[in-house]
Amino acid sequence: MTPPDGVKQRVEGESKPESEAPVIELQNVSKSFSGERSLLDRLRGRTSTAKAVCDASLAVHSGETVGVVGESGCGKSTLAKLLTGQLTPDCGQVLLDGTSVGELAERSPTQRRRIGVVLQHVRGSFDPRWSVHRSLSEALDGPSSASRSTSSSYSNSSNHSTSHSNSTFDSPLDDVAGLLRSVDLSPQLADRYPRELSGGQLQRVALARTLAHDPDVIVLDEPVSGLDVATQATILNLLADVQTRFGVGYVFISHDLDVVRYLADRVAVMYAGEIVESGPATQLFDQPNHPYTDALLGAIPSDDPRDDPPNPLHGDPPDPTNRPTGCSFHPRCPAATAACTERRPEFEAIGGTHVRCLHAPDATSDRDSDDHRGDAPSERATDQPDVTSTNRP
Image (cartoon, rainbow, N blue to C red; front, top):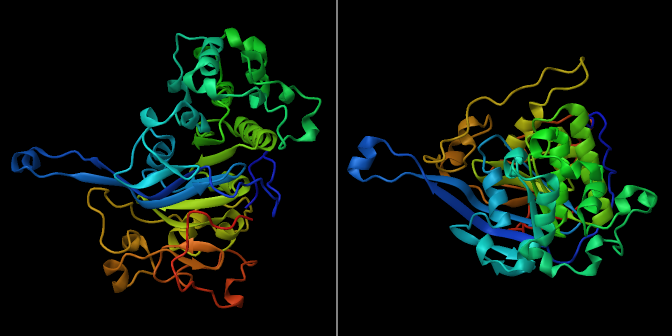
């Protein structure tokens, strides 16, 4: 795979700043919603529950990017809302700096500041009656701003990139003009309204609004969907620059595997509400150990006309109100056996990733000619690993 046009390629093995403990962590969280019921079900008193997230664990450190990928409806956005406190889990817990936290209203101003979010439908997240200046001013003056110190301008951050010393990126983030410059926008845009901005401009204003709270981790839900290729590259490169300068961590939710492959340090693959594989991005994409990960990669069109056409994954994800027994992927898995219909796989460490599959890694095909998965037998952990903080490249 090659990076999207105009996107700076992530350096393999590049070190990222990381604290000893994750900033935000999900531990075995699950979330269900009441599903729609037919008239007959209502008359008979039957309930219908849709399981959106099932027993998911994820950890995010400062300065790293964790990609979350999967088909539409797999639970990615619900997972994001659990991280930000917009939803509370039915079971499991959300930890902020190792302390269990509840929904957003229950978190302190300091705790709310720590986790920022850029919503998927960014235009709908702005009040159309408010100018850019008013939206950013409210973010600067909001409840969480009380916890910001004079270092919120990041002028003393050890994560600054010296290559930007002569750019507008060095502007402090304590006023509207500085926030706009930090995302490479002119302060003159402050008097405009959301309807007067392009999709790319509004996406950058949304990022500036989030930076006003001095976050340690930002949840980005499909940040480049619906944008043209050139604008996507601009936004992605900006995100990389912001991370380099400010040391902020990202949860990058996307269905675009090419983008995730070149931006993420670690990746979690979701299917039917479960995280079925997680690990360092390079290893997961080069040597997928779950057949669903392998199928997603096989469906990506190649930019080389000599390559075989993509092989789309057949079938549909399961109904969240009627999940299959055993492995949730077995109805679509070419390697499924009778055991897969009866036993729900537990996470195991195989090679460099953690995978939920009874037949990994034998259930996956060779990704390409450089894939040497068969050169040595896979190492299967004898105990259950902690999938919340896998080793990063």
